[in-house]
Image (tube, rainbow over all chains, first blue to last red; front, side):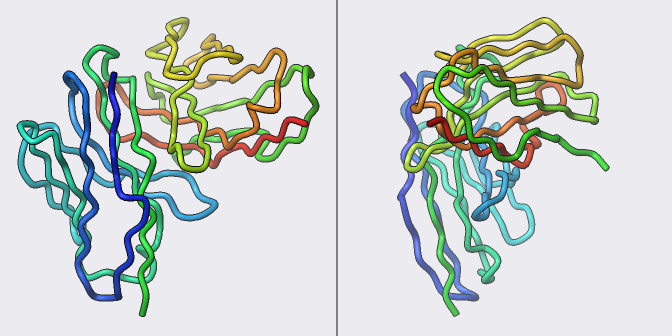
Length: 112
Length: 112
C-alpha cells in the first residue's frame, strides 16, 4: 500500500525558515505535490516535483529524493499569512495520474 | 472567472435520505475528483473521472456514487447516507495530466 507521513504540527516565528518533511512508502509514483489549506478554506496547489531535486517558486521550495523516499517543503521569510495546514500528496503509478494520495497534513503556526 | 463550484455548501440531513452534492467547473478540465476530509486523516479520494462517462474508485468509495454525463459536471450521490459520512467534501478538477488541481470551496455535511 501507500502511505505518507508528515509532522502534525510545526511552529516558527515571522521571518524565519521552516522545513516540512514528508516521508512516504509507495511502490512507485509519478510525482510529489504540496498543497496549502487555510482554516475554513479549500486546498490550493503550491508545488510539484516530478524529478529528484529542488523546485523553487518564490518563497516556497520543494525537494524530492526518490532514493530516500523523502521530500520536503521549505518556506522562507515566513509571514503570518503562512499559518495554515500543508499537505504532501503522491500519484501512485498503479492508479494513473488522476489517483492522488494525501498525507494527514502539517499545521504550521507562525508567531510574531 | 475560472472556478470549481459546489452546492450546497452546508447540509444537515438524516440517515437514509438520499442526497446529491453538485460540482461544476468552467475550465474545460478532463479530470475531476471528489475528496472527503476528516480531522487527522487529511484528504481521501472518493471517486475520480478521467472524462465523460469514465469514472473510477478512489480509496474510500463505499457508500458513494458519481456520474459524469457532461464534462463540466461531476455530482456526488449518497444513496443512503449514514453518520460516518459526516465530513467536509471537496470537488476538484485539473487539465489532463498536469498536477495542478483546482478545488471547490467545500461542502460540509452532517448526517444525523
